[in-house]
Length: 134
Image (cartoon, rainbow, N blue to C red):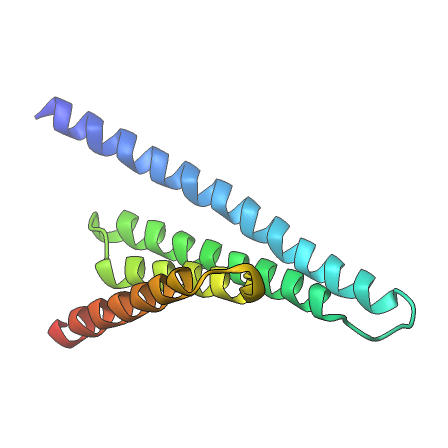
């Protein structure tokens, strides 16, 4: 009985520490996105973002969203001590979406694109099934 309580306490402290660290990462990532946008807008010719700048901004933006999703899932885990499959599917879909957004499709084989499409489809179907069951 005491060992179970000790393990739960350790689990709780690690979860809180992870939330704090993820919070620092999300705040830092948000500041990085803001800095990147402002510095890119102030570069000559001014108030113009190039395509490569947009890819960088969107990639960082999606990374911050992934961090927020991870933060929410740790918070939900702290609340009811269960991992939520729905949140995991959303995090995976966001991560794959980020990969697709920042990927240079000119140098990628058709099999890689097909694999990414199959992965997105599988994750979407899995998310739909879990959502339907709840």
